[in-house]
Length: 88
Image 1 (tube, helix red, strand yellow):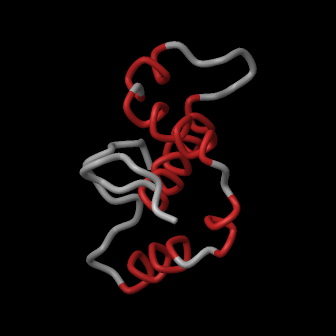
Image 2 (cartoon, rainbow, N blue to C red; image 1 turned 135 degrees about the vertical axis):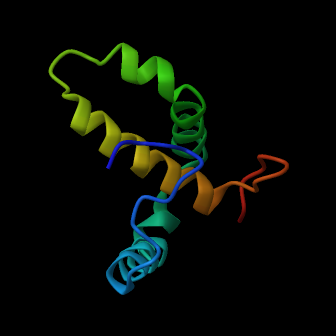
């Protein structure tokens, strides 16, 4: 789906949507990202309109939406929402 930072990636009114969300939130790979990768992900989410307007060469809009959803998943799982500090 198109990226919207204030919306959910999957339809939360269905079991399948809630299931997909929980599978992605419980992904153990989220524990392996470095602090730099977390910060870059957060900056991608904050600058999403600019990133969608100026796609890198060779990247489709659909691929950018997917990259932004992944960046939001990484940053929301590893950075405190109020302070921005990394969560150990």
